[in-house]
Image 1: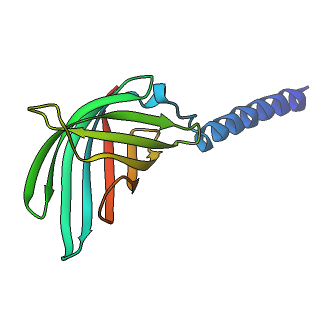
Image 2: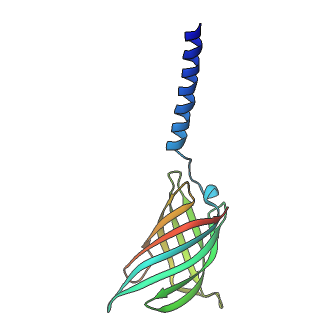
Image 3: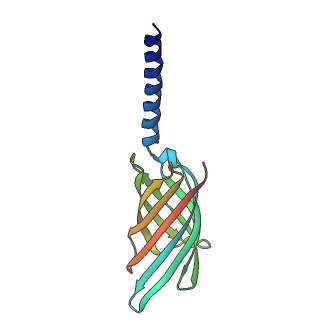
Length: 155
């Protein structure tokens, strides 16, 4: 009888441990709803112009709703030229924590579209969807190598 009780306890412990390991290996499925909130980000890299490579950097934040729409602001520096912008767009999140972000840039004082008018980024969410990494894949008139790191600030 003692052996049966010990076997049952060991089996229960193994079952609970296996379930915990499965959860640890698959922390959850991403969705627009699970990444909704306010995000802060930095973007750095290079713009390749006909006269050479120039540095680029930007910093900003945006608030993403559960439907994948966002609005925010950013300030960029291209070779030292500063440009603030209002940003608006969409973010489509896949269950595997990858996605696509489409961004439009607007002059914050006039509301006019800025150049580039729209860029598209490939996104991957990491650290249980509390951080994201991005790279621009289209939408710029000059070739660019720009990467973005974002952190979720508020749910």
